[in-house]
Image (tube, rainbow, N blue to C red):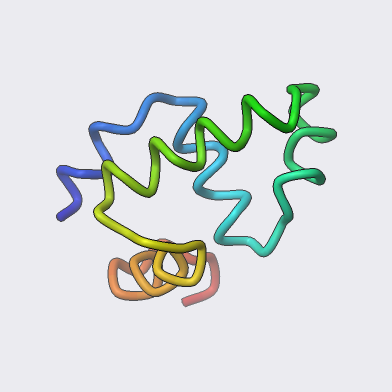
Length: 71
């Protein structure tokens, strides 16, 4: 399943990391200086590539693969 992570683009991985850290789409857009729509597209791509249905699923994925700092 770590292969799925390798399919993410660098920007998608960045959005993944920020979502898993608890940031909202709006906060990510502001931080990365992107439009909210662009962040929504990246989020949708990440969900699809990692076969997740929600941000909560992304957090579970990150926990299962020890991708959260301090874990």
